[in-house]
Length: 383
Image (tube, rainbow, N blue to C red; front, side, top):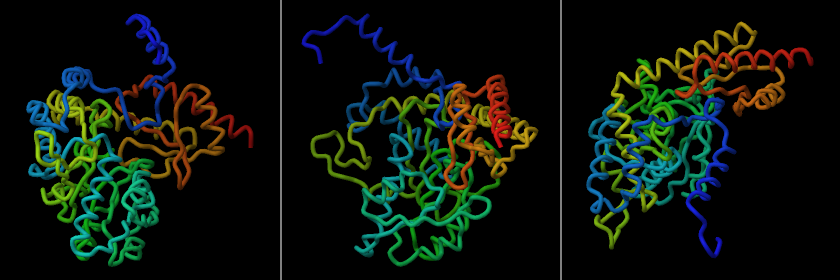
């Protein structure tokens, strides 16, 4: 830090220069975040200095958070769900398993493992480390859903929780939550659903998948408004079917305006809750249906045009996530990145992973497809 401050104009100039180094969203085909809705930005700015960690000082922000949880709970099949606005899927997953572990250890101090799909987000590896739990990974079936027989093999008396994914990070697939629920209920095991991505997609797809609180065994759900919910970063959500599980996370807070606090972080900006509330109120269900439909239309267009190039998807897209089987995957990705397209690669099976978020337009997608044709053509010529 300098001894003397510099002018506001100079700070702005430096910041603008740093921001110019960032890549543009219209070239991002690898991220599950997107450009926030303008009303979200307004709301974020209005509530920027509010602290949900001390809600008695900010009753308006606290009321907004309650309404957001109520709306998301209704969207996920339970208007009576409880929870809070988190920083995102990682925190929500940590706290869900934290609650499951605490519930398990009421019965037995020995609980020591969680069973997750091989496709689970890397946050579950963090959870194993933080909560000292063994993370057992069940293989995927031919449709890239978790293999239920393998889950059965991995579960034992020390299993704290089962995890299912509603919208896997790499393939956009939905695990068989109904069958996981039956398994969880039969064995008396906690079931958590990570719908960080799918939470703001599946309710608006007319999907026949049963995956939310309408499924009896589901105890908690992770959902991220800063993904397809078009809120500002960071905005996550953790919802529990019953208050009992949220209460298992409570810590005494002696000097605040509330006696206990259940969130992982202490100070929590009300801006994320306000931004989420603003978007949900502004768009309503029909607005989200329109956004999801547009993304799915573009997803289908991508697959159709890729097939004309002889490129097949790993699975038929369930939502706006596409993984394409291409020859010379590292080379194709490198050539696309050299043309300014930010694309990623799935782990197993390896494929070119493309996310069609609300910031993607038809003209831009067509430009990408032209470059994909060139990049894969070069791969074919090199063989």
